[in-house]
Image 1: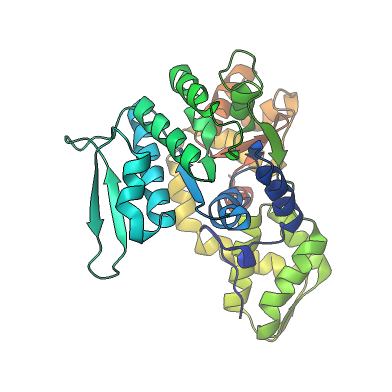
Image 2: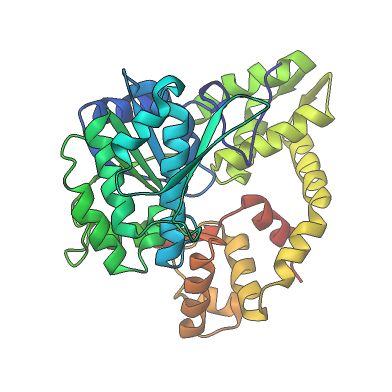
Length: 372
């Protein structure tokens, strides 16, 4: 029986329908294009980038390098992520028979150590200086270029907007990456404002370096067969209206839709679920997560809780400057903007076309039902 997976990277068969998107992206990458792949968090970007795209465009002697920049705050952080991505990518893709020779070919002027796993027999290696630190940024970038010039390569940069804090880092990266004219690259991001600053501002090193591709919400027509395939073995029937409501409550976020689906699959059997039943089971799910949600909320200031609760009540909210929103929060416009900016940086809220919502729709539903 197929299951609903959430909060983890999933394979192609466990990803809710993205066939058209994957086909379009692969066509562009096979032509050597450089893409900015945007979608809010929990839309499946990382699963597509790490688990699907490399297999879809793989060719002989192919190497895919995946770098996760979420939360980087310094040049040292960036170097650590680059070192890890290079070592993981080469460990996975270079043939073990000629592994050492392959490393010497692409990691010139860099120290590395090889450690075979006595249990699995797999070879892993670490890139580091003698002092145990990652090599300098420019050294890592030049090695990345060397890899891409030596092998057919796909470069994947996840949560790339988190590098926006340093013009110097972006400048060095652009200087090296622009040498790879025909190497496909994907820059993934969940914060569109910051991505726009990097790729659409003429003051940025990456101005017009890549074309934007946006993952849109999955239509209800695609969710129906996905759900049926997973709940039918337990003789569960989710009515069309209930599924529409489930998607609405989840604000179209695939991860949340699958989390509710998993709850249904794990707690029900031989049952038809309509809208009324759905509201009851979602309430049960929220109560099971109440302690964790309460802890998250307690970490916020009173002003932050007020703004977050107002966003939860309104859903997607564009008019944060309106009198209605100021009355809901009992705050001034300048105070609201400061809080919105902080919550956005922390990833607690999402932004799309200057509209805002709570990042985790279940937390939003909890705030709706437990507001004072």
